[in-house]
Image 1 (cartoon, rainbow, N blue to C red):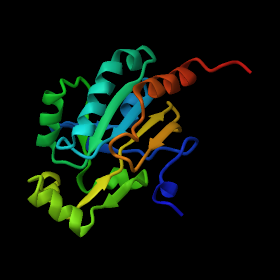
Image 2 (cartoon, rainbow, N blue to C red):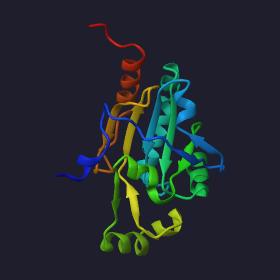
Image 3 (cartoon, rainbow, N blue to C red):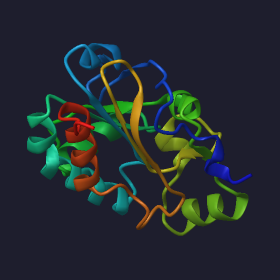
Length: 187
């Protein structure tokens, strides 16, 4: 059984959650679901250049996402102050939530632990102390993943890939998933 076999898939219920945003305001999945579909994007952290490219791409797709009455939420295990940096650096106009201890990412089945060599390499070579950024020392991160959840709380699109560089959901695929929810094809 592969690592991602336990991750949530399309057709399954999304776990409910309430997390603080970059400005320490509580954001619940339930609130935006009352208005329309929700796109949930998990990323490793503000320190990850590939994550920032993805966040920027989602920001560019945000007008199309909103055309379908959807809300976009990004989630990382970092402390909220790093969410502020991600928001400002990428000029984001959607909430960036802080998932302390990867509790929500764990419910989605996408958490992995950095090995000892990678932990030391990251800390000593890149000067990126994940434990310091995340406020706890589990050295766990979420696999980059994107979910589209319909108003009933059912995942209609799921994309999780251990390839943190190129294995990310394309914004066009997210928009297409939203269109399929809002404008289903008659059969």
